[in-house]
Length: 293
Length: 327
Ligand code: SF4
Ligand code: SF4
Ligand code: FES
Image (cartoon, rainbow over all chains, first blue to last red; front, side, top):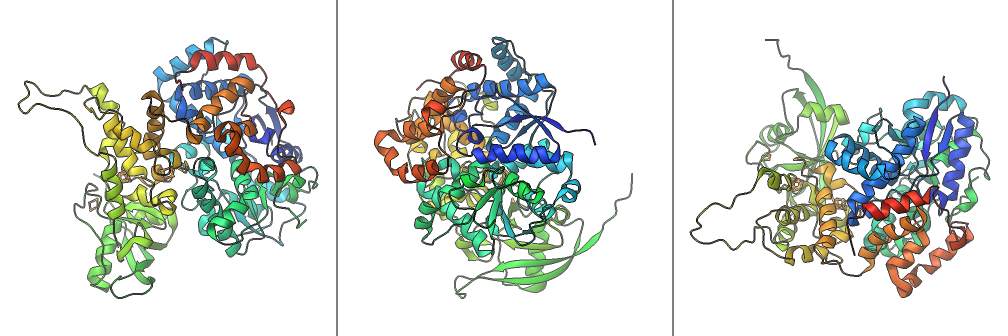
């Protein structure tokens, strides 16, 4: 197989509050022989909030990020569900609206850039499944996670709106019955746990504005995984990770029940199965201790 | 003309049953049926009633995807029963199909739910055109095709409630206005003839009930059988709150505006600073306990270590020249 190369859009979180996300992404890529070229020029995607304030500015900034991936002639991979959504949505809107595209390009021209629409945008999870292949991953597993019940937590912005996200990956996902993360758990030798909240919202995006709502959603998600006998949860989204890993105190209070489970990034889970070390995967950076290893 | 072959499949239906007058708790009943490729979900509801149990209850009226009465959930997915082909459902979910009302906790009898809260929220947003029109106007109040386009299909909502009962915030916060009513608010806010001033937009700007409480889960877009795309309208309402000058200086608006400040400064989001900026110096105190835990685990970047995007001057220039909103 030809070596896979991608332009990596890290987003902000992997550089700040989830350093372990960045470390484990790189560790896994090294193990699998995937080359990731970091888009160091990229800006924040606006995380769906800048869009509420200034939609056009967010389009320009996201188009600029994609323009840098285009310069490399590579598919852009994201490692955050919300970055994935904002980037894919920008791409969709510009590719389907010539007038908007030319307005955005007028701005980009001021800094010598152009958005052409030539680069594909996908989340690392789907790059692994679509391009690398689960069978190949399976064949590279050296430490199968067979003693663990693992609860997948998909995160809204990878699976909804499905029309848009399915444009970005070959393995179309049914948001009411998603399978990608379950398949990855199985490929790592783990037991995938089924529970109602696996495709629900963690509440992250309203944490400051609507803390009670956000806490209940977090609490329900962790409680659902606990009730399904999960040993830990796994997610492809660093924002879901932050919410589920650091906010269970407030969540427990709101739902009136003590809830807490270790929550791993999908890259950390895969890294464990591929034989990466605790240090390489940044497992010491979790607020809810990952104490099963 | 080619021949059209009708195929059949065996399907097990797990059907939600509940009669508020008689049952203490709801239960599920199983019906096994041979389903033909020609049938829609409503045909199955009819057959349960006609062939199995005459007491089985559900709503339907137009049978043309227009009245919104027949909306139910199939394997958790909101659906207009009269529009949804069984074949597609089997393809999506296999041969075990669960039929449930849109909201289990609001079920009155089987698939029939009490939509009272939905209509209350609908009424809350002035769901009509506010315009001072003369009794005998000289000419019609014309709307150009371009002006009609601005409604972005918000006018095709059939009030089925699928989005409302799919919304996780509606589920946990009874004050939340909800996606359908927000889409309705947008429908009139975007209408060039509307003269409601800022009353409607102020209503959806209120904390605890308004658009700021949306968690951006996209369940409403996914659920809507008419492709109204409520979350898109919610984003437009967010934008209007700023452009129409009704934005208040509070945690919600500062949270949105804070992104721009941060990007202009670092290219990236300064996560810690965003929380302080949004909450204010006093409000931020409640986040200190979690912040300390995160700090101990190396999850907080101190101001002097805040990473910056390469080519920051480029980003600064674009933020300056492309900004359209002011607050
Ligand atoms: S996107 Fe917002 S309004 Fe729509 S379902 Fe989710 S929380 Fe509700
Ligand atoms: S927006 Fe769509 S889902 Fe919501 S009530 Fe209207 S038609 Fe139904
Ligand atoms: S019966 Fe009217 S929409 Fe289905």
